[in-house]
Image 1: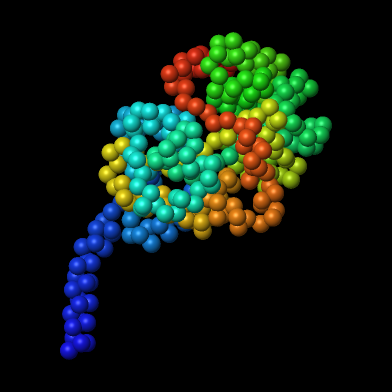
Image 2: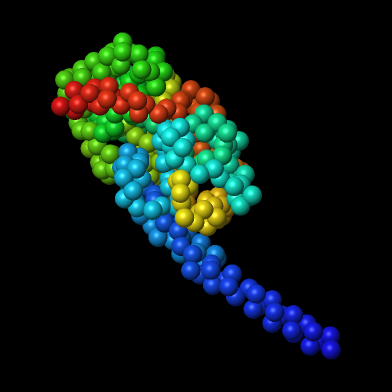
Length: 346
């Protein structure tokens, strides 16, 4: 009788469980992320472990992502905006508050990223990757270590400097070089920075304003130095051992790309499962190895080799972070920035 009772109980449990498994199999989420910014095998792992299907879409800039969201061009469950866009979307009530009871792995994020200035309550975003902006340089083409942004403005390096085709990065590091805050809106500060960038161009120092193609050009030895994001610098250095990376002593930008759920997402709990999955240490390690950017998961940092821990491009020390700033949302002043960039690029 006991065996029969147990069998009946098992049948009942399986019958009750069937709708749950069927629902999981039918659930899908749409993820909106940067190009080439996840190990594709991670997506397959998530689908196999949860039964949730992932539809994947890409964007190339924060502004493109933001415009598509606002235009209703797609329905997304998880998005990967950078810090200043997260700040803007919080202000505009464009993000869902996250339920961390569904995301225990998210508690493993490095302490200083849990309640950052762009998300001061820490309830709207979870850090995905982070890094710095600095100078990638060819040690064969420069004299000694680079320690200052001034080097990128030195006429000695005529036609030997690649600049990022990005107003925030180009203007931001120039402001830091001049001793001003990276988010300064003071007209005098912006004018001085603009004039420095115009002179850099007029002196023939800039070889080009580029983005993704800069990596390959630096690997090929086509310039002495480039304004570069740390992950791209790390990739380049792995391909050419004559390359080095520095965050100048005047300071720079420290950035975080976060994971968020946009307002009105249709599958919030499944989206939170996905975010939690990406915070799992083994998965975070896979993505770090694939993307070359710094992981925000403390357990992954703790398990790094001594060589990795001492690599300041991969694992920036606190002293570097302390002299850097996040970009703030400047959407209300973007017309000024756009006008400056048009003058420089024109």
